[in-house]
Image (cartoon, rainbow, N blue to C red; front, side):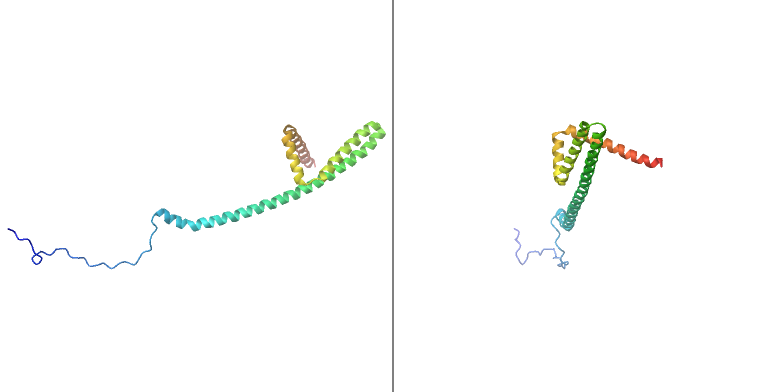
Length: 174
């Protein structure tokens, strides 16, 4: 029978151990996924963009605030000029009422005086209100009577257009 190999008679394996390779320098660990690496790279840019957006928002807010102040300033100046103009018209109509009394009769002069009083009342009302109050009153009027507001806007637009056209034609004739 065949003999079983003994430890002394056993054949040695033919495989040689490869010499151990020297380990390369340790590489920094890469992120587990490319997505995480991209997120890590984008983070500083995102922070800069957020800071820029916040700065832009602050500048826009400041600009809007300055524009609002200027608009109020111009509106206040316009209100004062309109009030002065209405008082002038009231005085003019009152003076005309005296002439009408003398030429046509006291009854017609009274009509003119009532008109002067009404214009003066509007001027007083306008003078006593702040710009914000006038804006609120205008909004309320437009909500309550939109047809009248549209008609008034159209009439004012027509009158202003006529005034501007006649003003531009005066320069052409000279």
